[in-house]
Image (cartoon, rainbow, N blue to C red; front, side, top):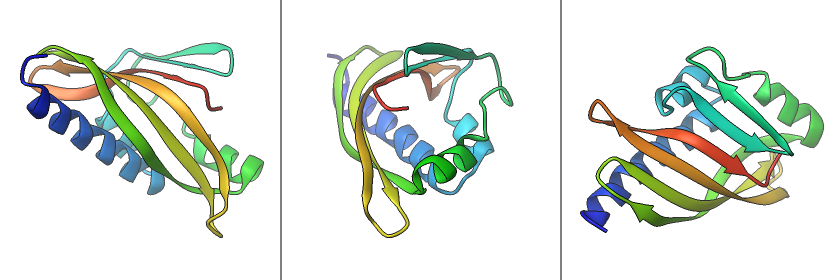
Amino acid sequence: MPGVTHIEQECNKVLDAFMDALNAYDSAGMEHCMHFPHPRIAVGKVAVYEGPGSNPMDLFERLKKEDGWSHSRWVKRELIQCNESKAHVALSYTRFRADGSVIGIYDSLYILTKVDGHWGIQARSSFGP
């Protein structure tokens, strides 16, 4: 795979910024890490976020209400395929409650693309809710 180290570093920067924004309940920060349209496949459904502002940002309140969610953290990230403009990253993340107890660990596949010189998350498929 060409330039794997550089591509992996760029993808990890985006993924770190996305997780930081998620944990800060920063919807604009999350959207800055995404390219649109942005499909997400989870819990048997496909949602397509057409552009900024279309990502359902009640996510934070739903997660807090349903599971007592406080924050999340990457468990692993593995670049499995890439070229100069697209990367497939197999990853997993853990969701935590405020007391540090684990809600769950979820495997996912994120597709990142480089558009106009900027890497962003183009699509997500998750086994998590």
